[in-house]
Amino acid sequence: MTYCVGILLDAGLVCLSDSRTNAGVDHINSFRKLNVFERLGDRVLILMTAGNLAITQSLVSMLQEQMNAPDTRPSLWNVPNLFEAARHVGETLREVHRRDAEALQAFGIEFSASLILAGQIRGEAPRLFNIYAAGNFIEATPETPYFQIGESKYGKPIVDRVLRRSTSLDEAVKCALISMDSTIRSNLSVGLPLDLAIVRTDALHLDSHRSIDAGDPYFSMVRTRWGEALRRAFEDMPNPDWSAR
Image (cartoon, rainbow, N blue to C red; front, side, top):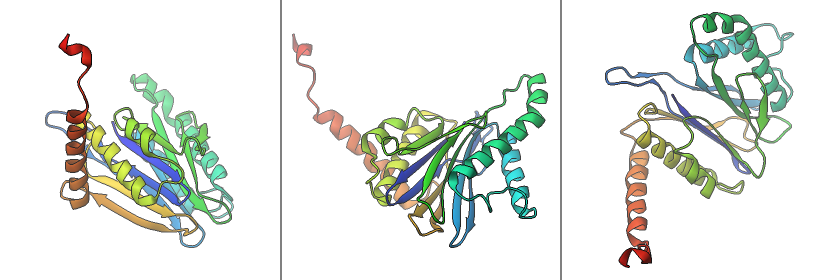
């Protein structure tokens, strides 16, 4: 299991993913699920993946092969906009499905993959897409400026309450980290280290890309102070008046 969240703001994009793929009493693996494709001054794309690791790794490898092929083939380097980038990723995912789905089904394995594609290509505003296993997709709107994939239910309430398109990048990072902490605390299959990527509107390059582990001072502070603030808010809230009757 995994948890990834992508946020689209007037100020830019915030993408955060964990790196845990399998958890058990004595078996925990970590693989990077946030991939960056960047050409300075022209485009920056971020692809986050959840689902069957073999499927998503095949997808990323095929996208990279297409990018290294002659320019006559469609690739993330030559699509004219983010909508066409999402279509290209979706079609590549269908190609993986055509190749592997039948063999997986024979072994009782479901073809599972979900993706978040975020970024900006020169000539248009930043955009954010959620791509499904069938290769179809939806785009973020001003009313719904974020997408989550993987184990999303624990981290959703804080995002719903806080995020607006006008939210600053710093506040969105704080919100995403709190959302991730809530998920980590409630689900063993989501865990550190985290991948955080930030893109400012019209910069056409990564503003920041950091790996966050258990020793990161800011994330440690957020985890501690958010837990303390929740406990104080709970204690300050009046008990129901019928409890004394």
